[in-house]
Image 1 (cartoon, helix red, strand yellow):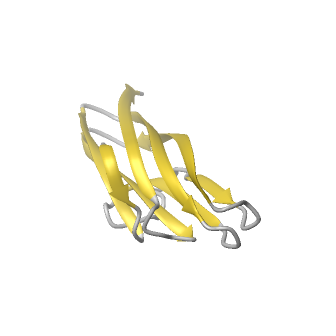
Image 2 (image 1 turned 45 degrees about the horizontal axis):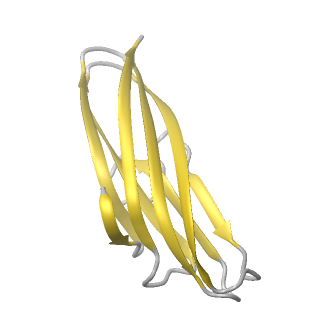
Length: 127
C-alpha cells in the first residue's frame, strides 16, 4: 500500500493470504511508515497489529504489536516514523490463512495522522 491513508479509529491497511499443504509456521513481517501530526501538550500513542479480522486492532493469537508514543512535552510538529514487526504463528494443518494489518491511534488522533506506506510478507515453513 502506498498513499495517504488517514488513521481513523481502528484502520484496516491491507491483508495477506496464503494456502499451505501441511502444519508448520507462518512468519509475517510488516513495515509501516506513518506521519504523526503531533500537537504540543497532547500525547500521541499509536500501534499496528497482525489481526485475524479487518475490523479489529486486537492482535491475532500468539502475536505481538508494534507500539509508539510521542510525549506531550514535544513541540508541535509532524513526525515521520517507520516501524517493523515480525510474528511467527504456529498452524495445525493445511488450509488457507489470512491475516490483516491494522493500525490505531489510541491517544491524540488527528486528521493529519496518515499511513504513507505499508508492506507485509508472509512465509510458510513446514514442520
